[in-house]
Length: 281
Ligand SMILES: C[S@@+](CC[C@H](N)C(=O)[O-])C[C@H]1O[C@@H](n2cnc3c(N)ncnc32)[C@H](O)[C@@H]1O
Image 1 (cartoon, rainbow, N blue to C red):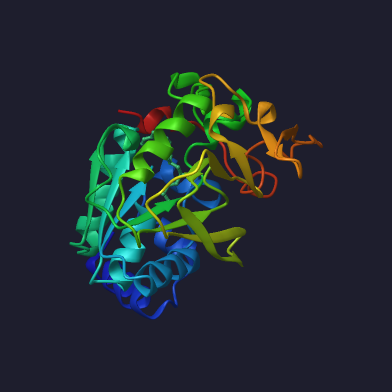
Image 2 (cartoon, rainbow, N blue to C red; image 1 turned 120 degrees about the vertical axis):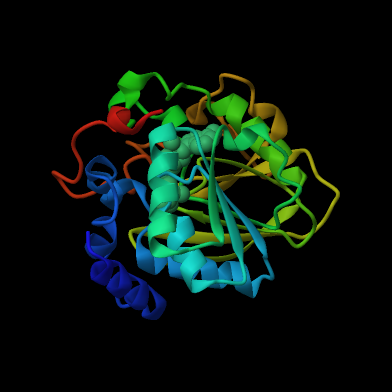
């Protein structure tokens, strides 16, 4: 790839006048083939960056940063913000670092690891593109099920996620795209919800310190469930809605409604093939 191509991508990123396919050309072929389904489109990344800035975020965590597309695009349009992407698949971390270096985006860094495995206190902005959904999906919905990375760990991760989001200061902002695939403490409030790209962007802000005994679930829809419903090993179809009398009723299941958005970001037929195993570290 020549320098001229990189210069043109940089220029067009700044104006927003860049096709996703042209940006994705900078990714290794396997990561490129997943872009339509798994990586944030440019227009959405720009919208997320604007929301994070508008709510005063400065230090942003992309939990599950994949090939780095979100952090690199958002970092290039919001130079005042810093982005840390944490990704569990080593090959994707390498691809993300390479992408940032080639485009000269210095405010986006990437680390290999479990995004839930470290403190979130240093961050005041969080971005999630449905990273935890794979834990609740049927194996053929998970892009590299054969690698053994994906496990059915919904209940455990939902609790760990809530504990991490508790660590953020009041005013912290969370933006989700295609749902979080997990739970958010009651101290956060949903400030805005709108259509973007192929899904919904939800903006949550931490408003209080005192938590109640329920959490928000941010999936295809938003619901409240009792903290106690997030038992280790629980599945989203075992979770329940509060009823008007203060008890809980089972969520109604219809078709794939409770697949945590698993099919909602799926590309049209033929969208992606192959395996992420090639990129797994
Ligand atoms: C839908 S992709 C989004 C990638 C990136 N945020 C973007 O929008 O371009 C979700 C990513 O989350 C990663 N992931 C899921 N659970 C994770 C965890 N606990 N720690 C780190 N990465 C995780 C997956 O490997 C996958 O690359």
